Structure formats: C-alpha cells, structure tokens
Image (cartoon, rainbow, N blue to C red; front, side, top):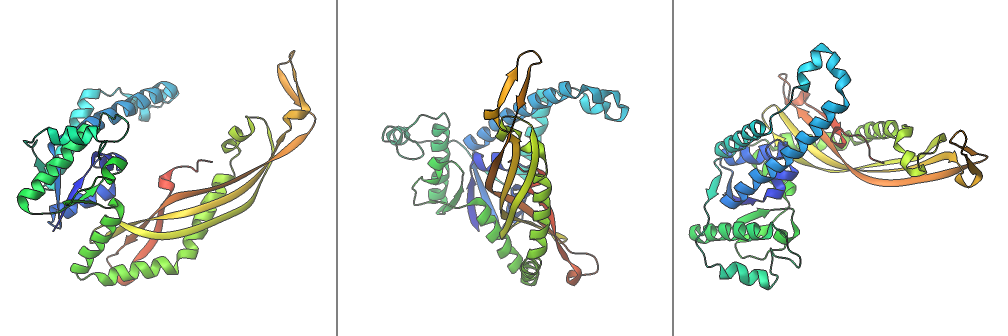
Length: 346
C-alpha cells in the first residue's frame, strides 16, 4: 500500500473535493489501494483556504447579482438571485469536506510533541520548507512535514508527498519523497485496472486515442478557429482602436499524451494537453496618421496598419471512454471538453 500526504496546495488547485482527480484519490483510499495521511495542521489549513476561496466566490456572485439584475424580471431565474449567507455556505462546505475525508478513511495526525529547536534551527538556517523570504504558511508546512515524518518513524513506513509549493517540493527527507500528483494518480489507476484484469480496456483506450488522434486534432482546430474568429479578443492588442480586417494566417495543433483522471465500471475519463499555435493579422487604424477632433471628441485616421499576433499556448483536453450495455467492443472514446470549457485567452 502507498502512504501519501497531500498538501493544501493540491486540494486548492483541484477545487478541494470537487475535481475528478481528488475524487479518484479518495476512492482509491476508500478501497484500500492507498492510505492518505493528513496532519491536523493541514486539515485546518484546508478549511481556512476553503473559507477564503468561498469569500472571494461570494464577492463575485454579489457583483454578478448587481450587474445582471435585469434577469430578475424573468420569473424562472428569480430564485437564482437570492442572497447567499456566507457562514451557512461555509458550514455546508465544511460538512462536505469532513464527510469526504471520513469516507476515504483518511488518518488525521494530531499535533506532535517535539522539540521546537528542530523547527527554529531550520528557520534560521533557511532550510526547506523555509525559504529566503518570510511566508505565513512556512511554519504550518514545517509542522505538517514533521507530523508525517514522526508517523512514518513510528510505523516504519515511507510516504509520498504531493505539493505545488516549491519549498515543500525541495524538502529533503529519508521518509518523504515528492511526486507529481497527476502522474502518480495516472499510474496508480492503471495499476489498479491491471490488478482487476482489465488491461484490455486500457489497451483499447490507447488504441482508440492513437487511431482517432487526427479526428481529435480536427475538432480542436475547429474550436480554435471559432475562438480566433472573434474580434473582441484582439482589442487590447490595438489599444481598442477599430478593426477593419482580421485574417487568420496559420493554425497548428499538436495533441500530446494523456493521463487517466477517473475510473469506474461504466466510464473512464482522460485528460491530455494540446499545444496550439496561431498567427493572426489585424488591420487597424494607423495611430500615427490620425488626429483627435476636440469638437466631436473623435479620432480620425487617414491610413491603416497591420498588427501580427503570434501565440503558442498549452490547453487541456478531456476525453470520455464510455462502456455501453452492448459491451466493451462498442465502447467509444470521445472528446468531451476543450480548455476546461473556457474561451481561449488571447
């Protein structure tokens, strides 16, 4: 069995308990494939960050309510604008987190009894997780790491650490070793599938992914062209002057390998990364050929100029492998989502 410690940063980047990856890790823990160790300081930090994220979300929601109040005239939408009470929302979120941790049989590690000289020596010597700067999170991080190490010593175990904070990643320990969270989950799910004698399913997914890659690239290319055919995305490039013509010169998409993010008897989800490159020519007013008319408060231009936009981005692509009642040989691997459902940010 693998013993793992998941830092708060991983929970936060996966929207706490909502993402497929976090839910799969909890399922693996529930089924006994892994054991999640959670220091009490990390548990409290997760709740603290959840509260902070909730506060920011409610601020955005309140702005949304104010800016879109015209929608209150639509009876079917009216209840969506009811005010949300912050503390009630947090208590519901906290209860959901606690229920998820309990169901996954996560072991909460109490605060260890230790000589504080260990922590302060590391602090004054700038040893990880302490860095050159001063961060409020460094002391809780240090306490969390020591809590896990003490548990490992007492139980003669080693533990895998998942974190996104560089100070934790670079922490040196004989008992803790850092791994990429997404890669570990992908490998673990494949191992569990193999143990369950379902390697044929994994092979079929790999074959479908390879055979239909051109089709997937075509779908991503179509999406990219649609995104690029939107004048509003380019105004910040030209200081919000008028666009007279827009010409997409080049579009290139490369689909990279995938990772498994979720597994069940009926459906498997994959996530891949696509490299998208594009070149767009924008014809706009030549600011050097214009003048500002103070009377009508308008700019007037005598010539145009071209602005070339060349970008390369990495975007996520989600796939769904569904097994129908007719059987595995009729299963399909379809492209489910591009860029997490978000527009391209040019």
